[in-house]
Length: 148
Image 1 (cartoon, rainbow, N blue to C red):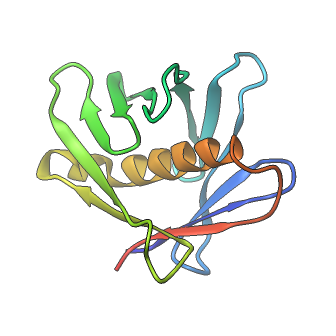
Image 2 (cartoon, rainbow, N blue to C red):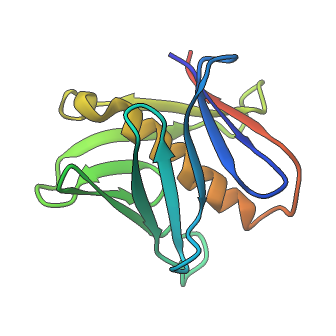
C-alpha cells in the first residue's frame, strides 16, 4: 500500500492513500503550543497532537509522542514506533538514502502488534519526517511515499 505526503507553501501537510487517492489526513503546526503538530484525520474525524522533542546533540534524533484512544505511543528517533507503556515495537522505518527514487523515504514495517494502528503509524511517521525536513529546507512542494 502506498501513502503520499505533500506540503504546500503554508506548511500544511496533506497525506493521501494511493498516488491519486483522497486526502486521509492533514497536519499543521499547533498555534497554541510550540513543538506540537496537530494531525486531523478525515474519516472518522478526529485530531491527535504529535509532540516533538528537541535534539540537543548532533546525529541524535528526538522523541515524538502522541496519544490515541487513551494509549501513549512514541517514535524513538525516526525509526521505531513503540507502545510507550509496554515498550512493544509496533513499527520500524528502514530508510533508504541511496534509493533510485528520490521521493521514497524507505520501507515502514508494521509488526503484528502494530497492525491495528497501521494508518496512525504511517501518518505520524510521514508527518514526523516532514517536520524534520522543514528544519532543513525553506520552501518547495515535495512528495513522499511508502510502498514497494
